[in-house]
Length: 480
Image 1 (cartoon, helix red, strand yellow):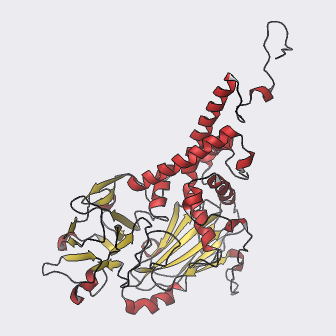
Image 2 (spheres, helix red, strand yellow):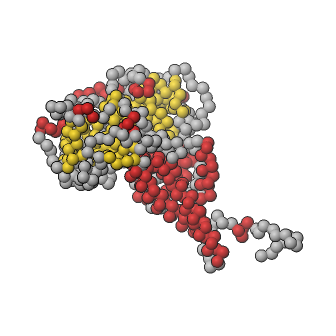
Image 3 (cartoon, one colour):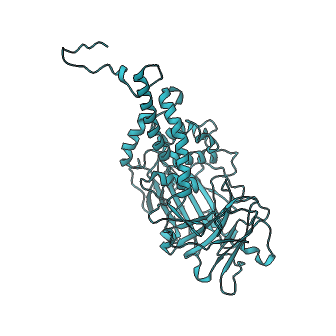
């Protein structure tokens, strides 16, 4: 190499000769070192980007399915899709749905202007909540009967770039990303109340600010089939095994924007592997060292997300998975791995103020729950879940975490069911088995699939903080 500097002074070689951000294989000893260094650099950053971005990519994937008319839960942007029946086996939008209330879903985009959420007078409805999440699945707010009462109201969901002034009568709810999701839950206490609940549910509406108060009916514009927002793999398979994950991640980041200004340093790091806003991630344009490192990062990042999904800062008591003190759910700050793990276990998990969710995987002997056996879980009268609203236990088949396809449809037991049978001492026995029990015990029955399953105990508006710290365990599940 020529050195044109004065005698005794070494000049910096041309950058084309020392670049370590694009490394291809050759036979030189120096290249071997540079190549391995670049692989490890891309791998290390790639794992961080995978964990950081997994919830955003999964939310983006779910939205792509939602926008597809072939999806059972199909809808348009910036408007509610009101489910008229409780979730059942055919509910495909996200895993571990509840089955004793009515869902309404809305994927929102507040890039151009705020969106007004109208809440009707909900009267004496025991429970309703409009959970508002950003594009990374962090809960921004819960507009619920707990937080705002039962009267009507209008709430303006404002994006990070909006700088206008809201009209009088609107309460601002800032959304830190340009896109997000609303999951509205409205409770019916008995089947006889379904029609009345549906009537209230339909009165929850979304309207662009420019149309608010005009009386004009807002009709959302469908997203065409060739729109990139619909060009996402239908399942997690490809996103967990190929560099397609990073292609979708860049699209999700670009559309959503950053959540917090203090994450700029992290995105600056991601830029070294081509990840970030306003970037097109094209694997074929990468050097071979970067491709190798990122391919390994996808494989190990996926393992890491799954591992945190299994643990999520939890402890195991009586076969139930309980949160440790300080384990965030619903809102995660900068704990990106916890956010990814919880999103994998139960996408769109809500915050502690609204509910506690306690999964169960094992019986009292430590064996996995399986529909080939019969089980009972007994709640003593003085040890029922402490709630202001209600509690329920729901069953899910594994590994798909869907509601079982059982002819009875008995997938949830609710504390509000007037037919629920109590013992003479006030206790409640929940029967978990594949075969139908006697008629006088049917209200207490969860119909198990013919293979592995899990339970989730949900406590809505819990009144005891011990439910969030692992100090309130449900009773053990006894196998017969």
